[in-house]
Image 1: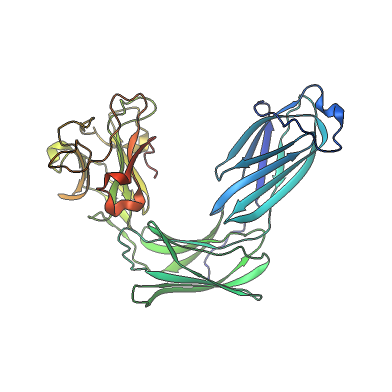
Image 2: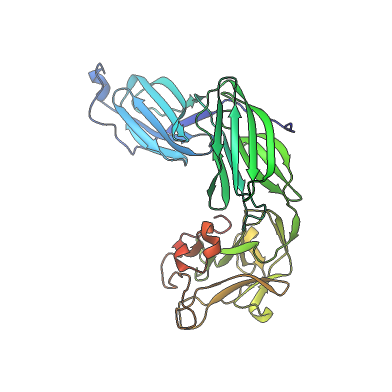
Length: 413
């Protein structure tokens, strides 16, 4: 098949902004040959912020500062910030290294002068050294497409590589080793069912170079159709049609689960009462004639304003009567009065549509009738914590061990 769209991307850069906020002092040892005068007088107070284009399977960013002193800074996959004082020196070297997929992937270096009391901005151009291919295929609740195994094959003029499919939670994934840049690769992707019968295959070519070091292939449901998307960062996209069932339809049992809830937030400026549902299907679900309540009875439920919920997205449902709730979460006129403690009274949250219960969760007190219950934050706690489901254990969600308490994250897993 041929790609339908491709947008080129500029060379990745790693920007480091330095501004005045002293926090981290340099070490006491100076590298050999450093001028003794560089350690005297005022320092240059800097805040080091590392910004970068994220890539799949990113491990860490390492920054080395070498001049009048030396620093070795390490950050995780998130944006990194370091506040520090640097001694004046004519030749400060800043080196940045980005590790992904278990190896050094990009690096950059720049040299500059720092004067006492100065505030300086620095950008380090990052250059890709190698690339890799990462494929992510959402299977959906119950794996309706029946994908059981698969193989990704990459063939260049120099070598051929083959990688088996791995399953992680609700996704199937393929990931290659680090690959040489400047080569064209023939890509073959084959998906098979439990009997070994091929249910999907793709054959195409891609080029891995400094501008496109990480082609990321993923299957995405886009309302009425599903596509496989070859993406590099956020602004490069190569789409190939894929014939898997995907459509816009009403939600039914097995499509979604209650993934998070908070019923004792006290409606302050930090948290608010909400119930979150997650669409684990490969379709866009039409949430209409749906209710959230303590039971499936309409008198104990609140009608949800009709919305469309894309696949693998979470929807937070909150009250329109509270100004604390963000606008996009105000989906019911008024939230039901859910029980706010683990009392002797049965306490449930029920999501139902057209008279059918799609999912429910029990968080009341454990007794002879209710042998398990989802953990609930104390209503007297000073900091609100929501009850959150490990979405990878969606099919065992009645087990309280698959729930935990944490900072509320309505609308995102």
